[in-house]
Picture 1: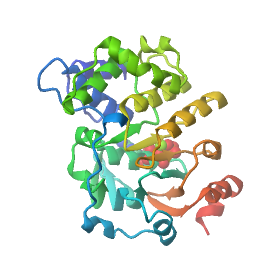
Picture 2: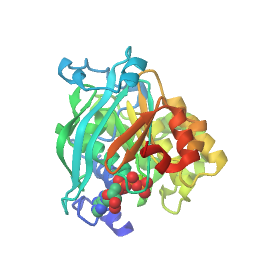
Picture 3: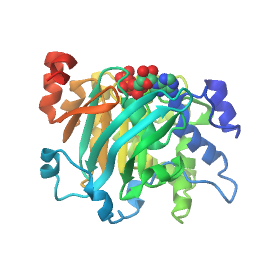
Length: 329
Ligand SMILES: Nc1ncnc2c1ncn2[C@@H]1O[C@H](COP(=O)(O)OP(=O)(O)OP(=O)(O)O)[C@@H](O)[C@H]1O
Ligand SMILES: [Mg+2]
């Protein structure tokens, strides 16, 4: 894994069947930034909160996605941010179908939680949204802020305001955390036609973000995620989100491996990034996260579809009765 990442940083081909899915966006991102010193540097992950492009008007044609009646009523005043309709996808190599018709609408300002048994397709769904090359979309549609997301390459998806924190954050040997963040942030600024921030200015920008995620400055000079504990990696993912911002942040098991204090810190930071205009899509197995990040909707994924949608009571029932009690009804 480390060798693969190092090779990627040295501009070797980024995607192979052996590449870890979790490394994908970060590799693309890193690859983008390895070209930072060339005039034609490609775009980075997503837009910072304070420089985010205004939302485009939503096309009438896509507002016809069917919503569960209750979901429609609850959020009728907001704009849809993400509209997924009948999405099917296979593993590119084996053609095995994993997503079998996912339907989901996320409105501005909402927090959606996806729960589901191991192997039900949650991470696959999120990776398909960011354009991971291990998967091929075979049907359905995805619109993000009114644009056909599936027609965009991963960098464009990132630039349009989509951020993903992977279930297993990638380590990037040889690249310090602060350099990574600075390069990433500057790549965004260049794309927006804004002047880049030098190290000192960037540190000024970064300082409150570090405080937000309650992370020690020592981590800035360490290589990205290298030797970080599981919880430190998750905290670092949220730091990236705080620095880069997002209209829709997908957090895949951001709570796994966190002690209770870290869980509070990470949740608080995620909540602070939430505005009436942007949304969170949170994948988790545990009700305890929902004590800190309050969901608008809870979905249960089963065998590649969203089988059930409800509010927090669905997660509570799940905790009590298990999946059998929930999805059989
Ligand atoms: N690149 C891949 N190659 C082979 N199988 C894959 C690949 N990606 C996903 N799968 C398979 O697809 C199924 C869904 O995987 P996915 O990671 O989406 O599950 P999940 O719901 O996130 O599970 P968990 O809760 O354990 O994280 C699993 O059976 C997994 O082994
Ligand atoms: Mg998963």
